[in-house]
Length: 115
Image 1 (cartoon, rainbow, N blue to C red):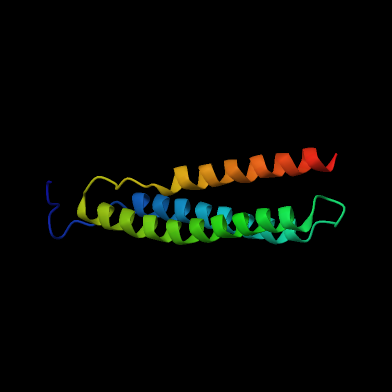
Image 2 (tube, one colour):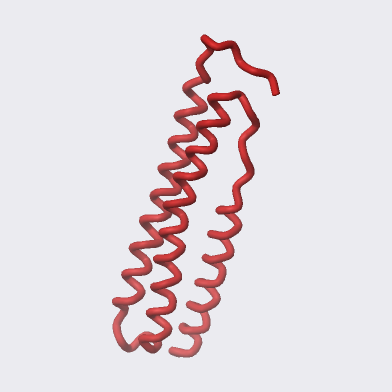
């Protein structure tokens, strides 16, 4: 690893891009949390309450994971940017994508069962 000179500052554009990515993940987290609350409050004619609550819990858990994971990733990226190191690998994207896939399958099953 090549050490940057002591008086060198990282390019602020990278830090700002990292911050925008963090904010995008926070928006995703808020959307997942709102969807979780919304699903639980669907009209009672849509599926049974167990299915709605299962979807709601999964969405809220994914929203919480996205929020915590976004901060951890932002912090790790900031450290790497400041030290001139490669950006660390993240496992949060496949986990969130897998979770959304599970939510989608459960929602599809509930929609089909409701028709």
